[in-house]
Image (cartoon, rainbow, N blue to C red; front, side):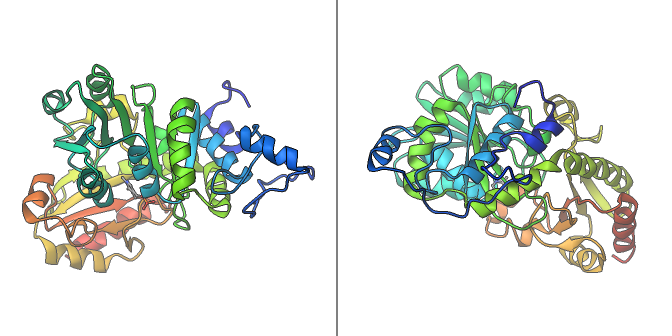
Length: 393
Ligand SMILES: *Cc1c(COP(=O)(O)O)cnc(C)c1O
């Protein structure tokens, strides 16, 4: 285990722990607890547990620890804590550090459940939340004040793939001592450079690219050892949002191929975006890897990639968008992303259905908008599928 290892080596080996049997594959420790040789040993472990000493699966587990060490090494943070879902990660990252009277600034374009945490849950307990247009640095500057404890944003927004400038917002936040918490799902841990750009805490739903095969819910929070062990862990281990050992094992296996998968998906996404751009039945084709994307230079500087999603607008509206989706043969209609299987989503009627019309207008969620999560199928087959469905629309 060394910092000198490159990404793909870390993804295969980092954090591996072997039992006395020397098993090759990472073992699943499906156990709630651990046996102490003596009462004195139990007492000592409750005072301070060593590196390879565990107490109870809600606090930590060897399989989960392997996953946490692997993702921390990939992300470049000192430590990580794995959670039962992406939402357990988002709510834990925020709730563990906030108290009544604190102030948080957040971008407005958020995953629905993230919006619920900030708008409904935190405010119920007396946290003040200010929402800003995440791409507007002047708005961040105006909203962040000396009393601000944290800023929160999705580094690339869902579904319109708008970027928040991590470096610039971190500078604004750090000037008043606020913690920068980034939901980095759309950027993927492969294209993430959030820590180098100033982020303090990076949150993933591992349900997405890290599993990568749509099998299990999971989440993870990456940060400094102080934040993870002193602020977050006490909160998570007592409130119950820990990742199960079985899920950790799924995520560990997902990580071995994460770099290969994300790069293959991103290459296909770039080809698909180029093929769709200018199509007669489409309005906007949104892909940060296209030179036409207003934040293309920022995407290249921040991620070095356009990512694995392409969003486009079928000009004729909802009925045409539904006809298009129903005509797809390879691409599935669903709402996950980062899966090996390509997925088409109609945000206005599913993931963002709850939003009032003025919010949809503000976020650019038009009736014909389709979000495509590009999978691992052959890019030519995917382009063929999209074109035949557009022809029929
Ligand atoms: C999916 C998602 C989440 C929530 O993750 P779950 O694993 O579904 O709980 C949070 N943020 C973003 C950006 C997501 O895409």
